[in-house]
Image (cartoon, rainbow, N blue to C red; front, side, top):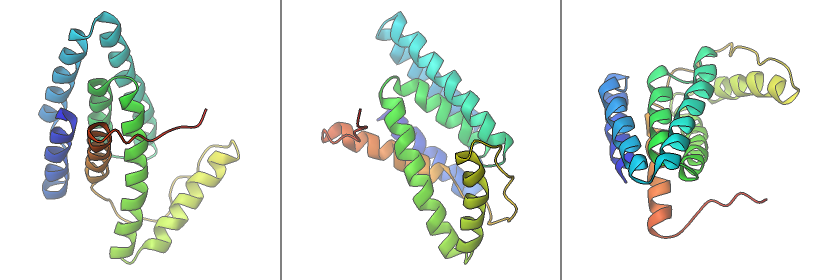
Length: 169
């Protein structure tokens, strides 16, 4: 629930100021790792490792200009705060919400075709095992913290009502 509250604050600042404050990221990380430490050393180090792994993957997306730096830091801190396996579910929900948000923003701005071209230019080479092409059309930035908030809210509601995203094995 703490991640959802922090995500709401991040979404507010992202929408109003176009950024996520570092202080919010640091507080979430410190709060989350403190909680994980109370679960034992193993839980602490697994959560810390999750945060580092998510930050590393997010940095790769940031280098391709697909996500903002504040979003990367916040998602990494949230993953560390949530621990395993909630971090994975949170990220999946966030990615799904980001796709929906991208479509909505593209529709509202009249740039859905540009969004589709960018996704196609990026994803098709990636699926073929090649290096993705840099998006060539500026469809505009979107406040991705809204997708992060949706992911955190979906996880919180799923935990409250025992509804979970299942990954077939």
